[in-house]
Length: 185
Image 1: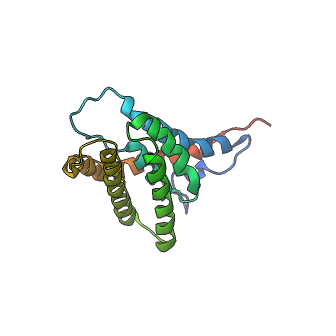
Image 2 (image 1 turned 120 degrees about the vertical axis):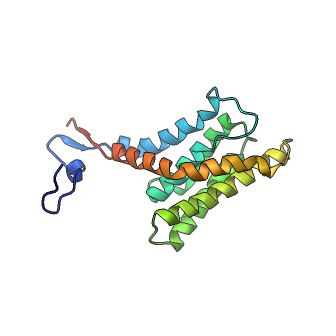
Image 3 (image 1 turned 45 degrees about the vertical axis):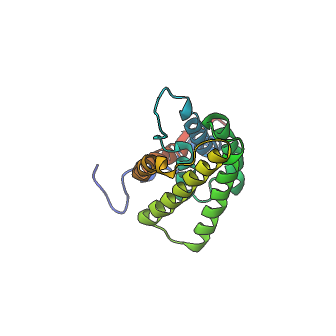
């Protein structure tokens, strides 16, 4: 597609046309649904002797929060963490507490770093994910699990490597979230 003037390809994607407008329901529900569906990933038939799969639902929460800071409210960590607690196998209440703590921490970081780029977002997400995984491991050890932080290394590395890919998926879902749909008046 050739560029003409100051218009970019796809720049007319979000302009209002006759009988087409972004859906407020779709714009609100897409982040919530993606995080809830990722919380169901522990139900997948993947068998491993150690925790290898990164916390995709938490990574989606962090990704949505970093990509669109005002989209999820500050209290969104509690209900989404509750849903994740139901399916993750962690002690009940750990994700509610840790996700709420992460949302508060990301809000503080957002206040400190007004302008962020890809590398800052990746660094912030890596630190938040590492702290979350370590504290979730501590909560699991309090509930009777074995405390062995070396078990987290493959999960951490996979989470650090997968986060940029996950942000691209979130960006595509953000385009879906803001797409124009037929408006019936």
